[in-house]
Length: 286
Ligand code: UTP
Image 1 (cartoon, rainbow, N blue to C red):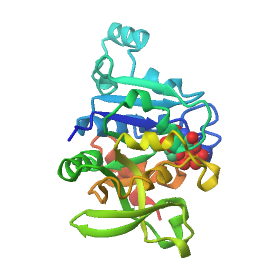
Image 2 (cartoon, rainbow, N blue to C red):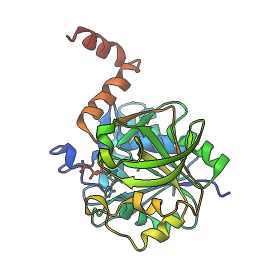
Image 3 (cartoon, helix red, strand yellow):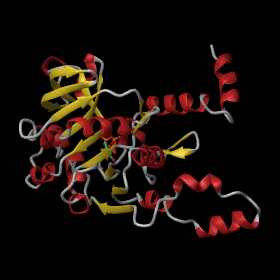
């Protein structure tokens, strides 16, 4: 079984739910406490043993690459002023560990992943959507890689979603369940509640086999007129093992304003530096 060494971060979306903040600014650079969303996703990938990060970017997303680069002027000035550079440590990646490719038009998540096909090559790969902030120890992808090492094939992260919310998710048709792992018998993107095969929704973490790229070579438009990753994955079912896993990490949907604010509050409360002040403020709320 080939190890999962590469991860694709599709970050070319328009972020319309966060306008006007995202008019001239990547959604993935929005900070939760003091780190941008992309940092949490890259940290999670590193913890899971990922060696190469592949960003699928678009116009206005240059800050995402600059963020993981050396900031000579900033660092020289900080040194001159005797300030420690330790705070920048999480932004350091080994040479060659970051690749990026452009998605010229936001045609959908399936299309974004396909744009990375040549860099991914013929090996299994992870996909992380940074706006799903997964917070837990072990991290979400680490748990999924452990599952992958047991059963191989394709692994997607799933979560029980509210029955009235199925039209916001890809939903699985579940087969046999063993512990946290459920066999995936079918997949449908954004079904209406009355048509949903279950309430197990796909969230933004995947481990996929490279064959999905061959399916995406000839894509079909799916829900919302977009090239959906879910539709391509559905065609792998029956040809390769396919499992949905639930994980211990908690999900904050930071593509959504309420989810983003909740994430800031929850993570701030855990911090030694800002936690006490935020806790005092919250305690005073009525
Ligand atoms: P979303 O559905 O959250 O879309 O995409 P979005 O454009 O980012 O945000 P809204 O809904 O307009 O507010 C899920 C993930 O897929 C990426 C996004 O960047 C996000 O990480 N994506 C989506 C692409 O990279 N390209 C696409 O064509 C579509």
